[in-house]
Length: 154
Length: 429
Image 1 (cartoon, each protein chain N blue to C red):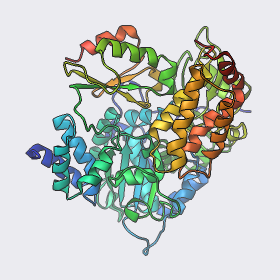
Image 2 (image 1 turned 30 degrees about the horizontal axis):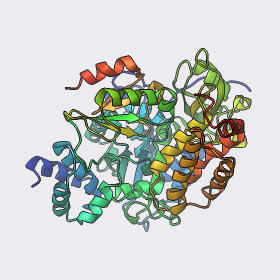
Image 3 (image 1 turned 120 degrees about the vertical axis):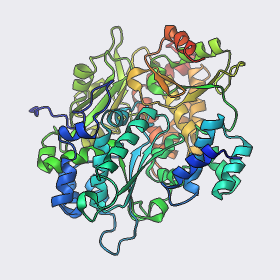
Image 4 (image 1 turned 90 degrees about the horizontal axis):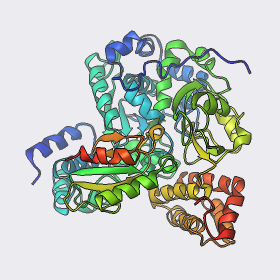
């Protein structure tokens, strides 16, 4: 069941669009915000509430990078793998993160603390290499900074 | 060429790492004067005409004349309603970060530009289509939108006129293709962001089948200044035929990566050496992408080229977003192109076969060459793809854009490709 809070947020979004379909993506983001990810059950609940077919909503869900159809960790790391970050040391950064977290790209740490995802250009190329943790942008990264940054997310 | 006096209308209110000006501060700095002037003294047609005369061209990459784009929207009492104006704030072109600077640094400037554009085409509803990861921009835009509603710069009967405008912030869920004009419309409608066939063009049949104009953030940010100070003043900011200033960026191994607002037509050497501080110590310039990931490489021989649409095109590339990505002498050009093609393959929407199947093939060939398994015929396969995925063979410009860095790398860095294949390894490792 969608929570009262989720319904309230979805209804607020409805005011911005003339069709229910247009609210679908935002509704999934709202549910994801509350539950961490969009399960099959969540998807059905949203589709039913908005009067959309589950298939069309899932079609949108699987298209967009930031709708998670599998559980993610408490903190999601988006590491920029695009060209400016790649030139400035993305590969070493990724390897260090993978070693420290003991996971590959797309995976979640055993303790459920972090999920590591690749991201295309985060639009902060002047501070390359960069990554985002939850909603915080971290730039000019080097091997020393990584440990400190990770320690900041319990 | 004579240098014009420096003027930086777009970034004059922006102080990095500081809160952006609120409505009051923006107005004190001269903001919303263009809006006041337009609503009180100009007809929509006169606003459109002023923008046409300014010679403003779209700053999202394609460089289409903005006033001309607006003029395709049906006008008059018989025009279909509602009409829509969309700010394309889905900045995901690798190497590009100018729109972030504008939205985080001066959100009211974008809003004023959007209101003026909406007035010119008589749109009733406007959306900002913002990429998901720009949380700070979202927060600041939301605040600015609320402030603008409070003083009736948005809402019903703006400033006592008959013109009304609702403006909404839409945050995306992430895909590069959402920045493509027609894919953006599908995304905003809640569908998979696949491009639409043109014609009909969005100006006639766009969002929900209604007349729609989609403009890039930087494009719209120019509009308040053109309306407040006139087309002639705006033209005069430029060092080229194209009006105004441009926010140029540079990233890679330069001393001071960043973005700077400079006269349109500033030579590449000046951007690179004076503003970006030249190459980092120990690194030499090998080449650069002048306007983001989907533009052709240029090299040292092009350093005197002025960064405007026609000059960069004459040099064999595109101005694109005006964001230089620098290739240095210690970075493998083959591997750089592999990184670029990985991005394009991953971000293909999959709608048309050449793009969906061709880009992963290109990536695979490049990976093979980079890893020392390249065959001499691979270069022919790559060349073939630059033709088969080029303009006219695919549904939208995604794959042709992906072919630009590849075709130019095969031209300028051919010996690097050949060395990889001949030595069966990457000479840079």
